[in-house]
Image 1: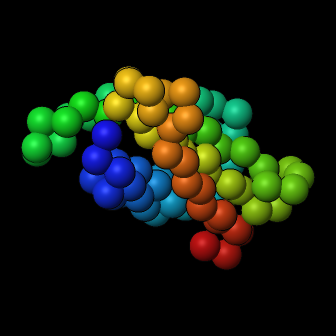
Image 2: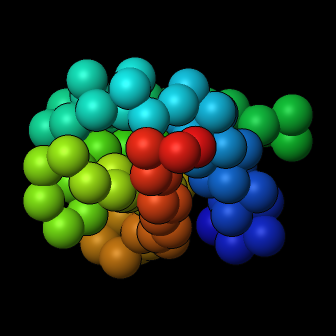
Image 3: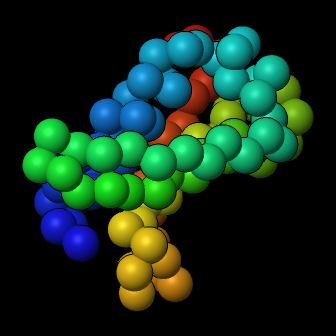
Length: 88
């Protein structure tokens, strides 16, 4: 897996989710979204996202994201997260 490419793909999708805003993310709490993407280079990655409360209901929302290529990396995927609060 090209770690730099995978990190860029993951960041792009986290940016998209974060841009949806707090209220939309609250509505997604507990949902798990899994899908595959194919990059312009032809690499195939599986992404998984989950939205959870960071410390408790009504507070900050945490978006958890992970990416792997289906190989050995699937055991320990590359992960990142974002925090979104009510203000933005």
